[in-house]
Image (tube, rainbow, N blue to C red; front, side, top):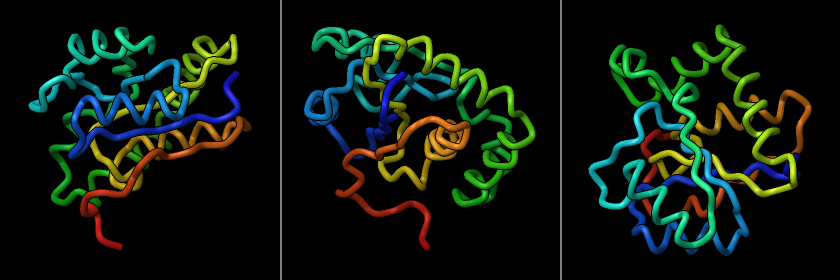
Length: 157
């Protein structure tokens, strides 16, 4: 089991910058927590991202079940509401956190370091921080959100 679970968003990053952050943090496995691993941003759709990560020795795993469901995102009128809706959804569906914990345990059984990834740069603007906090609340170790500076927040405090 990894001692720290990392998270990283690719918003306003080039693929090379994204990869450099992962390599610098010694991440060995990326768990893509987007429901649909597709992006307008070149290099960040599932096949291209998996290839780029593989080229630098990082394993890619798509965990679609941990994504923020499209129907839930559509119901929200603001980004804040979208994140809040996901928090309520996850609380009502604890099997998602349990299953994610199982995937993390399975992938990290040899101690490999893991990062959850999604679009939003700031973890608090993204559902991945709710997933990471749920993982930590299950009695696991710490969570570290990588390189959040560099663009404006989507949700204002």
